[in-house]
Length: 227
Image 1 (spheres, rainbow, N blue to C red):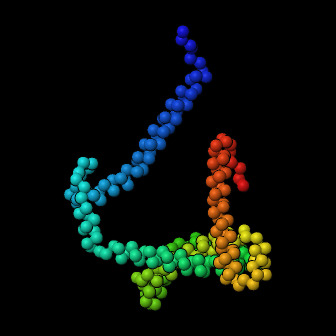
Image 2: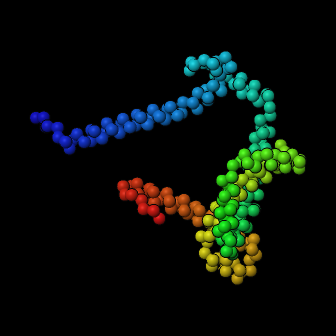
Image 3: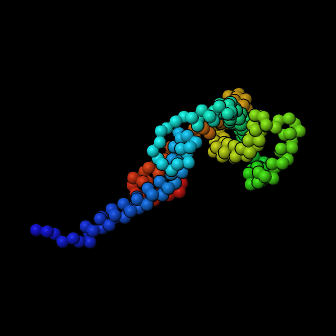
């Protein structure tokens, strides 16, 4: 004996169809966004004549890679990029950590103004300082050098590095400084062995706690409260 179809049994079917349609639309947008990347990737394994063809059937070749690497020494350029990356990171840490340490543990009346001023430098258009930096680097002989780029990128990223370091240093209890001072630790020892370590642990704990809260909220199907 057949049972009549009720509204209760039709709701799951409608939900399934709705999720299926939304999934197809999402996949369509994903394919549209990914297609240019896919096309550029396969074009790298075509010859110059095959690159003008819209056919997806071709014989892969590495001739384009050989021609590109024969024109210039791209490994040297990659090595320069690594040197710039490491140099900027080290210099930013060496300058930002003492600055953030002083602002977090020995604040002054003008500290907030200094932080806002440092952040406001990120709002200045790069074109406004392009010509002065070019002339300055040209006259000092650091134009088109690794050190010239290291200095520029350090000045660009230093305000953000100070702000991030200040945020984590500001969350460290002052008792740690007192304990280090009683044990006879120097300022650099307190920064490296105590404050920086605690700040790094707090950063990892914050990421882990955030992931745990999100996972718990998803599993319980409850809205997450801002903490």
